[in-house]
Length: 155
Length: 155
DNA sequence: TATTGTTATACTCTATAACTATA
DNA sequence: TATAGTTATAGAGTATAACAATA
Image (cartoon, rainbow over all chains, first blue to last red; front, side, top):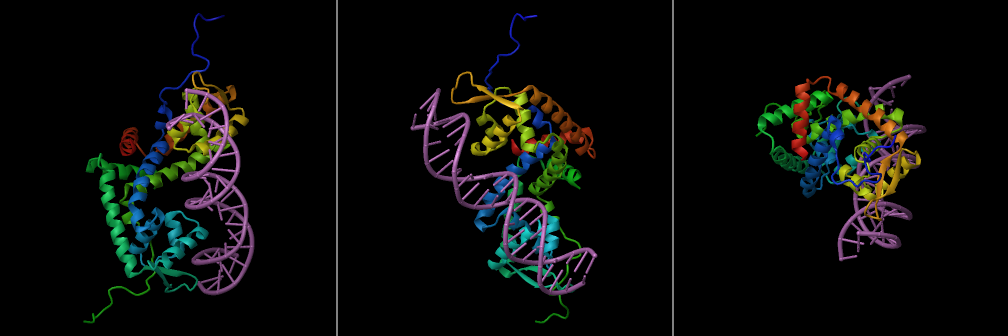
């Protein structure tokens, strides 16, 4: 039963890529949005010589003086062996310091140095400014909605 | 000018971690949501022996027969050297095949094999089912809104 | 016995330089 | 001269096993 015309050429060329199916997935969109923001974030943190993970650690230590390595790991989803170098690096730069934990001699409480406090302040200010830009195409109401819906996904 | 009481103990312990500042950032929330979905996605694709990148490639080839390596790279944000092995792997599993490009002898058009068509169909069905679960706590209207807002961020 | 922090190490992912065949 | 695809390789990120000190 030969057809009078071919339904598709055997070796077609693709003009514009159809991403329709992937774009219908929340995961794809969340990842794309995340990567877009992270890209700019990295550029803005570079002057402070901070990667995103460094910024996150400084911010958490700033708001949680005395936080332990384990607590940082749990909060940021980092495995303990991989945190060791990150902490050592910030300590070497004299941005953070380890103090004895009040009631657990195995652990150390992490604190910002005076320099660390100042750097964290500046970096958080930059992050907040970037936040305004990143959400430039969103109304304040849309931004609030987006945060709420994202948290619904992962909480 | 000594104060009559200390404003904070020198070595406090952190009971519960305050993530308030990070949670105020769209990037942090988008990344957390993305990771939460990706985690489940990986588990569901494992039976097909597909990672997310493999699934994305199969889906794009399915909907864009004849797509080139370069077009896959541009769409998925993968560098050409890193795509070579991914394509070779899918080709070795006889899920995809390379055919001559209609008007560029440097390039090859990628197509799904019969097996590839079937696997892509099943995997996309699984992805769609997962999508429903991932958005279980969202109403259809909220889901639609979330997609729109995420696309506003990265487009 | 379990947990904190650590070392060593392996594996995956991502990035850069350089090459060929063709446009 | 520029682009598609490839090779080789380096670097960053992430993972597991095992250990000492302490709970």
